View 1 (cartoon, rainbow, N blue to C red):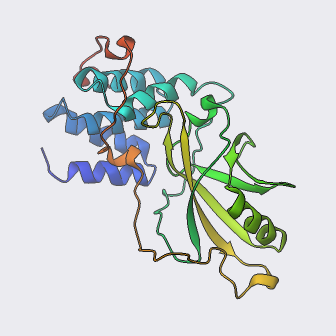
View 2: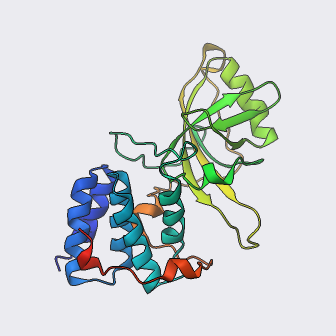
Length: 248
């Protein structure tokens, strides 16, 4: 197998060239049929191109190999929800953002008071979200105005002031965990970037650094597929499925 194929497949996914991603991952699987990372990437590419059955087959093949693979577990839930009104795939022709931490300009935030788990389960890293000021809070919504959660109170107070003054922000999903280690509370982190400042705060950073920050480049794990989960799947997830060679 060409050792550059995995990198090419990841690049195709980051460019949202899903048809090319399908071809590249299938090529990898011809020589490495048990490569779970390639299978997960293939399933994602199939789902993005509307092939739900093929995506489901690929995810189930992953779980046949590794029943603790959380990307495949979450992927099957996304396949299940893909056709519902609650689950929306935020397709965009633009490349996925690289989440670079910049002091004063960006902030990674864990949301509180999370919304419907069915909506959360459809989210993926790099999905865009809306940050909206309310009277007593700042809510985070999908582009279709579905509620996801709230900013912490201390940050929300500052954000309400900045938004009212004309500051503009963009935000994306950074990570989604439907089950934490205690298996009871879901978690959702978003990445917020200051786009522009209103006249009143033109010389003030939106996120004054309170601690030393480092520059970190982030690539969504859904594309790299190197995380090691700690959750199990149901018996249904490990059912017999077609081999990778039969996925076309």
